[in-house]
Amino acid sequence: MKKMTKIAFVLICLACTVCAFASADTLTACGVPQIVCDLFCAGGAGASFATILPCGEQQTGLVVAYKNEELIADQVMPVQELEGKELTFKYFERTKGDAFTVPDTRVGRMSEPNMIHLSGVDKSDIVEPHGLEDPIPFEDINQIQNKERFVNTHFQYLINLVLLGREKRVADIVQNTSNYGDGLSHTYDANQGMGASGFNIVDTILEWLDKPLARPNKIGMNYTVYTKLRTDPNVIKAIFHNDSGSGIATKQQLCDLFEVKNIIVGAARVNTTKNAKNLNLERCWGNHIWAHYEEKLSTLTEGLAWGMTAQVGPRYADIIEDKKMGLQGGEILKAGFYQKEVVLGKDAGFLLKNVIKTA
Image 1 (cartoon, rainbow, N blue to C red):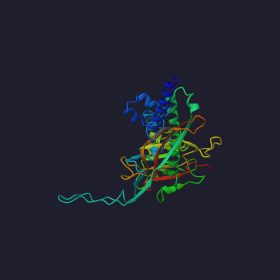
Image 2: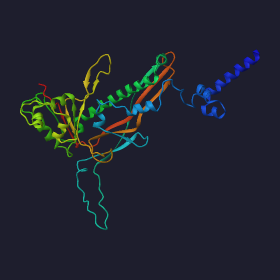
Image 3: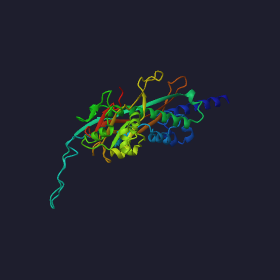
Image 4: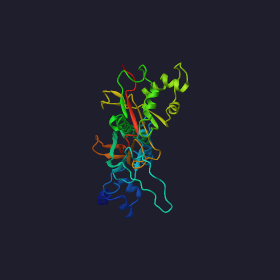
């Protein structure tokens, strides 16, 4: 009896050893039940053990679809998802004459149409990986009652922080005067701007809208500027046709006043110290007004737009095991994307900095 017990023990050890190194597909083909494969197998050569926290189509879809309404980067520099997995991409930087030279479009009865020669510049760039991870020790995982809800919440938290980083990058690009053509940016002194005697923001914006080679169809600002603009006496007079100065303009009324399709207002704040215990919250979007032109069907290589964002593949979400974490190991949640923001047409917009009087 003892001899049979020893033989059984040896066989069990041998089976566990085989399962540890063989793939589930191999064992299944040899007649091993699927439940045994799932219990012992690593899932194939080079694969990690199945994670305890769930990560399937629901979690991936959540990260892909997540949207924070307070962030405006996607409206300012729209995302174009590229085909394939190549991280290098090409885009076309428009020049002044490219979009406005009128070609001869007449075609003779037996002749060929005239060929256009774009005068822009072909450029290439590389998308950059942007992502964050959240390590969760097994001691914590074992205490979680609703693991699916926990994972969904954490993935939303991660991708929101990644998108906040994108918001800051886009804001820095938009508010940089070097990203605009000659004569298409202006910085006001502290005693100038809305609130200064004799300053008319309506006349100012209308004048600047005519300066770019393509009249902008969207105007952006932060909430401080938006509040000041929608209550400015010159705006109220132009919209409500009264001299009392009372009233508040809506976004649609401002769109109608300046004849643009959209008024974009940014509200995001970031901690510039990168230290959660030493907060220094600042607005991503300063007290500026910017305006851009964007054709409805524009892409990185066609049409005309001030700026866009290249993206390779959808947003990424995954959970991996880390045996070195803590005493028992743990799992790491990761979320992010591959993107790169590019300015396509410097002459298709303008930037007015410090538009509120501060002195």
